[in-house]
Amino acid sequence: MARLKDRIAVVTGSSSGIGQGIAVRFAEEGARIVVNYVGHPEGADQTVAAIQKAGGQAVICHADVTRMEDIRKLIDTSWQTYGGCDILVNNAGMDKGADFWDVTEADYDKVLAVNLKGPFFLTQYFVQKLLAADKPGRIINISSVHEDMAFPHFSTYCASKGGIRMLMRDLAVELGPKNITVNNIAPGAIITPMNAKLSDDKALLDRLLQNIPLGRIGTVDDVAGLTAFLASDEAAYITGSTYVIDGGLMRSYHEQ
Image 1 (tube, rainbow, N blue to C red):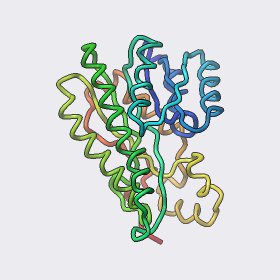
Image 2: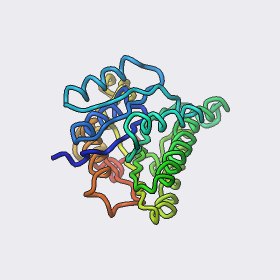
Image 3: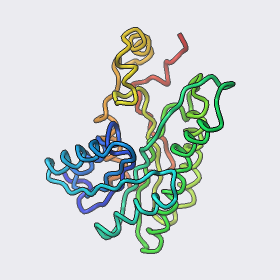
Image 4: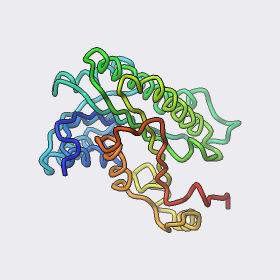
C-alpha cells in the first residue's frame, strides 16, 4: 500500500541510522525524498541507492541545519526538484555527555543548535512555503524519551529535547488552523551508529535490557513504521502528541 504516493518529504540527517530508515520507508510508501547529510556523503549515496532499489526517487542535499542559508537551501531543493514539499522530518540530532558542572558553552551551543534551533527554523521556513502555496503539511520531530525522562550527564540533550516537546505542542495549536499537523516521536534505545557504544558493551546493554519490558533494543524499522503512519492520511486527525517508542522503558526505568 503506497500510503505516501505523490508526497514529497525532506528528512534531515538521512545519511544513516533512523533518518536513513525513515527516508527508505517513505520511498517504499510512494514518496519522493530529499536526502540530507552534513558530514558523510557516502551515507547519503547509500540511502539514495536503497531508495532507487525500492523503485523510488531521491535527491541529495548537503545542508547544516544550524545554518540559516543551508536551511533555506534544503527546503528550496525540494521545491525546485519536485515542485513542493509535503512532509518535514526533523531527525538530525546529536548528544554530548558531560557532568553538568563541566558543560562548556561551546558544547551547549552545538547541541542546542542541532537539536532545537535547527528544527525551529527549518520548520519555520517549511511552513512559510506551505502558507504561500496554501498547502497542508506534516511535521514530525524525532525527539527522545529524554524529552520527559531524566538522563544524568546529558543535560544539554535533555534541555534540547524538552524544548522540542513544547515547541511541538505550541505549533500544533498555532498551525492546526492551517491544516498543518505537528507530532513528535520519542525513541528509547534504538540500534543506530549513534548507539554503537551501547551495542558493543555487553554489561551496559544487559543492564539496560533489564529495564525494557519487551526485552530488546528497538530497530530503525520500528521508528520508520511509526513515522510513515504519522506522515500518512491515516494520521490526518493527529496533532500535538508525542509517540513514545521504547519497548516500555519509560514505565519501568530506574537507575542501577
